[in-house]
Each structure stands twice: as structure tokens, then as C-alpha cells.
Length: 226
Image (cartoon, rainbow, N blue to C red; front, side, top):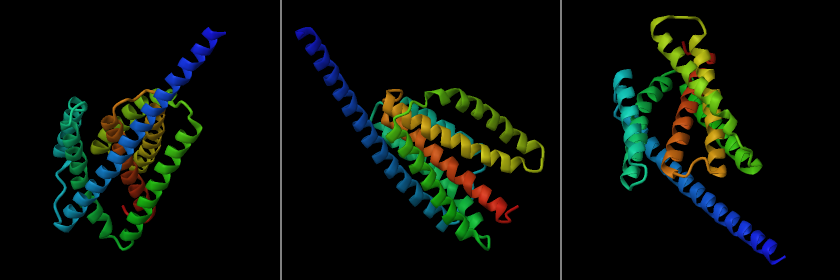
């Protein structure tokens, strides 16, 4: 009887520690995510105000993957935070010229506002669903990997061939892909698949960034943006 009682006590204590660790990881992740989103928005606003040009696909990819690699390497040190803000700030800079392009349209302001609202709604809805149901979405890993490969091939193909509806299909694909990543990453935090708040923040940030741009592009297509 004493043995069973001790086992139950140990189980409850272990569960309590896990819950505390998960709660701390959530707090750190969402605090850092809020700060990086704010910082990125400020950089984007500055980029728009100064009317800075887009760096181009080559520089953007080099900056994206270079800073992502650096952040991954530094994720367990305080320099990882510096790299995280550099990464998200860079994406904010690249977002500025894109927003200026859409805002130059007759209904550009409405498109950007609607895309922002839809992005927030999708992110908070998916996050809340994963947190409240505590479902394990690790089964999405295969879909995410396959989706990444398919989307990468489609994006590369779009540079060389012009197919009617391809851009719309790519944008729709990124909406689904980003949504799946949000569910997967949130679930990973809950179930112990992710224990580093910097990497969790980066994953969620990129998902939100891609989700916003994809929704904006879809709204632009349906709103008459060719």
C-alpha cells in the first residue's frame, strides 16, 4: 500500500514538474514572439516610410537562411536572442516594400487590414485549439515535410514557367502549410517535442509571416491584383 502511494506521489510530482516546464516554455515563447512581431512591424514601418527597395530574391534567401542558421547555432545562449531579433528584423525589412506595393492599389489598405485580421484569427484559433484540446499533432510532421518539398518545387518552377493559377495555388498551399506548422509547433511545446523557446518562436514567427503574405496575395488576386 505504501509502495503504491509513493508511486502515485512520484507520478503527481513528475506531472507537476512537466506542467511547470511547459507553462514556462509557453510564457517565454509567446513573450518573445510578441516582442519580435512588434520589432518586425516597426522595422517594416521604417522600411515603408523610407521607401526602401526590396533586396531581391538572392539576398533575401541568403539573409533568411544565414540568420536562421546562426540563430539555430546560438539558440542556447543569450546571443540567440540577438540573432532572433536580427532574423525577424530582416524579415520586417523585406516586408516593407511588399506592403508599399499593395498599399499603392486602390483598395490596398483594405487588403492589408483584412489580411492582418485573418492572420490573427487563424493563428489564435489554431493555437487555442491545440492548447485546449491538448491533441498530439506530431502526425503532421510527414505532411509538413512533403508540403515543404512540393511548395519549394512549385516556387522554383514559377520562376521559369508561367502557368495560369500557379501563383494562387502556391499561396493557398502556404496557407495550409503554415496552419499545419502552427498546430504542430504548439502541440510540440505541450507534449515535449520542443524545449527551446527561441526555436519555437522562430518557427511560429515564420509561419505567421508566410500566412500573412499568402493571405495578402490571395486577397490581392481575388481583389483584382494581377
